[in-house]
Length: 99
Image (cartoon, rainbow, N blue to C red; front, side, top):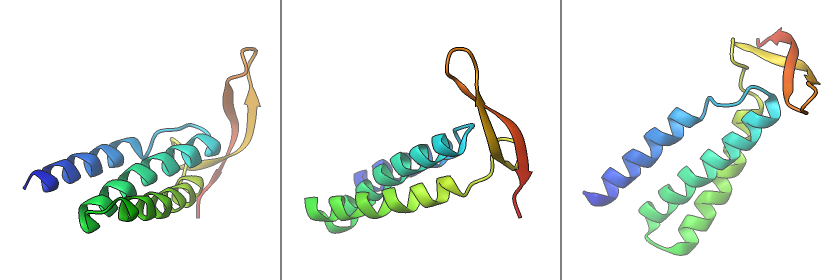
């Protein structure tokens, strides 16, 4: 039961953080990080071995990066042109709809 509670907490946290990021690069990195953590936890819980955790983390990170890169932006559109302010922070100046 303890494994189930830890797994449910990790997955719900991963889902809550999956939508964060205003640029495509942010969503790609965030998706990879969340996917790697969730995959590692799942691999460890399912197999009970460190090798399962490593394989789960690699598979989850790759899957999370692909999903994060192809996810829409904050308002349902994908950013196609990014500019940077004086401090070097990125912001989107043109969105394109996701079909």
